[in-house]
Length: 606
Image 1 (tube, helix red, strand yellow):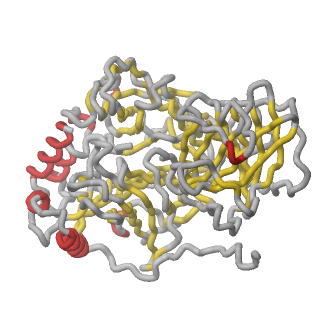
Image 2: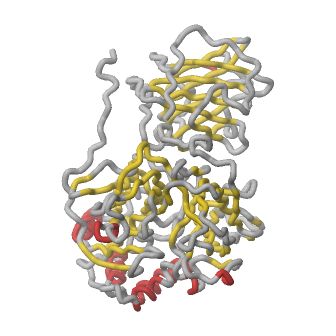
């Protein structure tokens, strides 16, 4: 997903040039160059202990799981492979519903491919259920583990579906198994219409009965029931209207809307995508911006978001709702909602849709959008959304040929203090966003010079799996805290510089925090100035473009530049006194860094 905040490129220049609160100068050609570039481009359920093979239950149906689960995911596009799962402190239980009368494959992979992977194979034959704990040693049939750590709990075969329920320890202490962690897990799946005669003669599943899906298996979830969803709800869709997607790889299209006058306060309790059937491959992300002091007469218009966007929408850069590729419905906690209907709440919205048409297909007409569900039953707290990280622009430079290069975006104590109340705010969900090069992602928080536990930390970030994830417990963000967003990029496949920008091939490093109670700071980010190369940021970039990045010594030279650069910090909020403010300073020297605790479950294992 390529996030961008409406008109930051075009209209932010007017803020820089004319705001009395700005104490630094930004060269006009720099912003013109950016404009040009963008135009041309937890329930606890213990597992069933091992015992005799379960009997076949012919009464189960593929549409309903046999037990209660915290998570549900359709793994394939057709809905032939459904996955349900739940976790406790020590175990994880899965249930698969697959439209086949043959074998079912399910696994956890380090790369998303067949090898290396931890795999379980199961099937039902002649009234008996079979389950084998396996691993891969190459792109050949899996090998059965010497230690069978997956426990079969239930098996069923209906007229056209095989249902299996199985469990294992989160850490089996078996070198042939993959430990399940808080990071993104690459799930692989397969199935075949026939049962295997033996494990040594396993029929190949083929190319159409396999796939991969990224999931956070240990993530906290919030079901509709647990969210306290009231019966008295209203849905409202913000939709594109029969838009003909251009036959180009990347399109950002914006549509404006006026929201009805509700007459009194309401709370949004659910946000989800409303994707036109068959259009999932083309809708990459959607952002719903809210705007202050905008005439409703400007609603019902459309335009290309970053190509001569109307100047009237200068204040439309705060995000109200978001959906990204791979994301599902998001429910607000039972005592929290996004406010609508008061004088401080928006009625003018802009839907930004990023269309991804890599095959340049013509004739696709789309009416997808975002759906919100709201209620007049007002909850205790108003939610807010804070966008933080590396300001999206070409000043983000990622060298080629690097296995690990970390971009850092800062939200300073000074900027946060503009909005965070003395009692602080409570962060309950985080969405981390980058593009194709990102392999690790961390949203860090610092207090009194020491690093606290990160809001989010993912060592296996996947561009195709991006959604808000609930924190396992609410975290306090206090006045005096600062935030640092780190993106770890792998650019070994690139032969030239990768810059920050809108397209999928360019990069971003942003974190979205959902919290309560709502404060006035809505955006807080930074970008480097490279003043050791040139006092003019644009000239510094142009000079660095000429470097021979194939040489390791040049890339090490850039490391020195990054270590010595000033950063320009900025913050904004629609109701924030003083509007945009900018200030420059060096990144702080960090001490007392946080170390993720390692829980040893294997010390007493044989």
